[in-house]
Length: 356
Image (tube, rainbow, N blue to C red; front, side):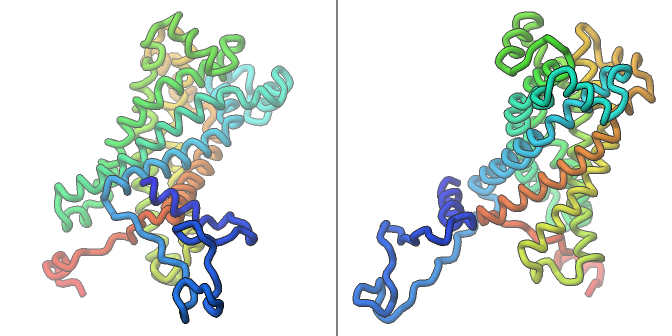
């Protein structure tokens, strides 16, 4: 795993044109036509980057690294939008709409107030990303091996759904404590301004249960969200290459492939936002209301109340999901992690179905 990270750093496209190229022993290479050529009569060529073995522990570890970067960076970047969205959900009377929410927040707390909750967001979603993406790859391979190559192709959408749900179950256990702290910081004025203030206060007032009382509604929000995120993305990529992109994936440049990734991620994100929004509202309200259960909060909100803040969440989640897939796929390219092509029917199944 660390070898691949080192190789990526050496071959980074962000190196300056003035960086000296060095051989593995640390010495600078000499031109082939000089006396001290590395190998007389030969010119130096860049060695091919070693590709990580698919399904190896290194593969899963690097996928987790990709998940940390894709989720941690993107969720932290949209903290201002997330903060206003949460306030819309818990206090519709004060924060009437998205733009009014920004205006009121800046007027009361200044521009810095929009960054409230960035620390638990960064650490919480980095941990979640590691489990979400890393374990998704683990479960997808394990489940495919369990049901066999032919069934893995025929029921691939169910495979994506099962693998993503399993991964998110564990990812939310890692996320829940920090998500609870984030919501309290963002929606309870005067409670705490930083994670260092919020965590000890929560522990002192409510004990360890303060960090996990939102776990079940978090599962209700995140598991359907992640199932839609992965299954819709995988299926959209497959359909885009089949019906929209004018050439096979293996003939597309890496840049063109990343554009397809971004487009598929955004489409998946819109569906994700709609499917998981009611549970998201309950999570926000639950961490604000002491002593209430998820059912109590849902009854109080009513059906329409559970759709508060949907528009900003569609904007946020659509952009977020697209960027996450873009970063995750970009990390795979940078670290030479195998990126399987769109699924193809196995030869054995083609023979059974008489498909050419």
